Length: 101
Image 1 (cartoon, rainbow, N blue to C red):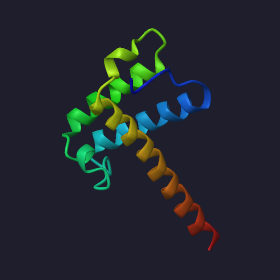
Image 2 (cartoon, rainbow, N blue to C red):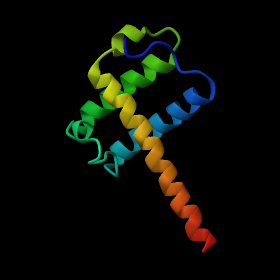
Image 3 (cartoon, rainbow, N blue to C red):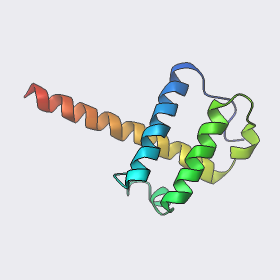
Image 4 (cartoon, rainbow, N blue to C red):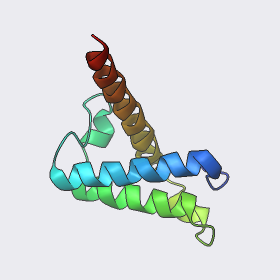
């Protein structure tokens, strides 16, 4: 079993916001995937959107079964979202440092 429980609290909030951000990036065709995740970037935008939506619903909605998202593709989507969080943080840090100099 890949996912053993629902995301709660701060992790759930961060994950939800990152999913929203990622969906917006894909919709705008703007920096929606990285070559550092070659399997993920090899999927079409529609495939990535479907997987992100399924993982988001599966991990955040109490009434949804985790059984639906117990695949390698869903785990890859989960990793892609956390990678998105890291990239967004890197951009924020770089932007903040630009203002300091």
